[in-house]
Amino acid sequence: MFAAKVAGLVLLVGALGAISFETVRVRAAAIESSVSDTELLAKHKLLIPVEGMARAKLRDNFNEGRGKRKHEALDIMAPRGTPVIAAGDGRVAKLFTSAAGGITVYQFDPDEKFAYYYAHLDRYAEGIKEGVVLKRGDLVGYVGTSGNAPPNAPHLHFTIFRLGPDKKWWKGTAVNPFPFLDEFRR
Image (cartoon, rainbow, N blue to C red; front, side, top):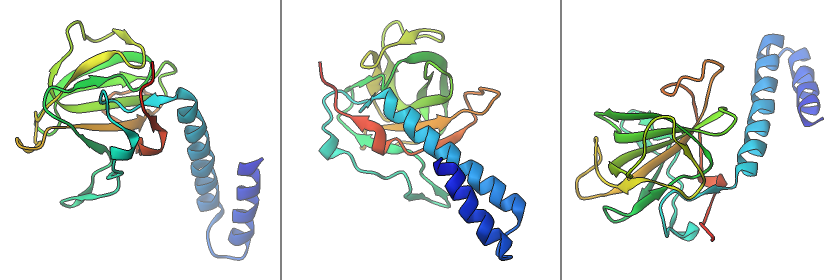
């Protein structure tokens, strides 16, 4: 219903000559996708992936600049060695070490629509390997400064990627996790 109203409004603007029909179609699809992404992620009841971190201490730095690019992640500052926990349920799709992210984990949600990305880890939790299914709150690894993180600023670099139809762990559209994260409760 919402998408139909938006599409109708955008069609009216398009009819007035402001934008093409194809632009209208693409924008309406993007709005519908972002609404469904919001609904899906809200249902996942994601945890703040750093153990003991209060929501009030989080800072939304997703849209901040990093040189010539957007950050597109949250940096969650915590002492080195603080446990990193699974934000939600899902399968470990890839363990990877890169120059930028350092020691990383890519975890797919149960429907494989989203990937949760944990970077700058100090080390992995014992037993973490590709294919392991995690439950929200399970230990993933430990906060560190691997990759291009400053050595004096241990933190977890965390984001969510909307996966494409090919389900490639290294590709996707970044989604700001900040609105979807909540504190861990037993």
